[in-house]
Length: 245
Image (cartoon, rainbow, N blue to C red; front, side):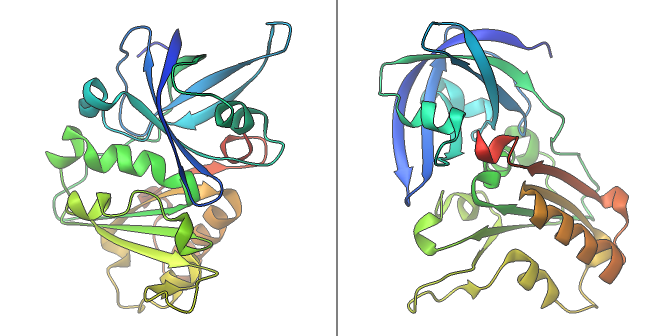
């Protein structure tokens, strides 16, 4: 699937919490993508020259774009070139992208296997695209667990979406309010409290988000729970990549 450049118009902008931006757009012509892939945002300088690009995962399924447009879920980082650029766009304004890219996509597995999707913050975007897709719904594993880590409950995006797709969805909140009734702690804390006898070796693990989280989760899975590295798929965000864009 070859990447091409598109002129895009903003259809909708919404904020979740203090720093999560959900943006829907329509490109100059529709493009195909596989759930889990990303776009590259072209950021112009004040003189109109291209100065840099930033990458963001598409957050909705290929089947939904005709109705809602294509969707991005972006963490707005103070001083971040790409996220600041997107945060200052208004409905009706234009921006450019090249798309699609990436191989962090759903690998069809045996119906006897389980799938665990572990994300932090806006790392949930490719998983939303996957679980909403026809590809996933027609090739479901035995069970699916989405484990999302956020700082506070105000930062939870896509409430009810995963449950509506038939996915068990657990949110781990590291700095919860007193009223938070869900899991308190990080996604790594949640994994460590699962018993050794859990279905570790019958799962495929997909990891997306903060790079440090991904490295720690891999250590837990491989060194503490004996999971094969071949059952782990990861896409890390770093300061130079998506989370700081």
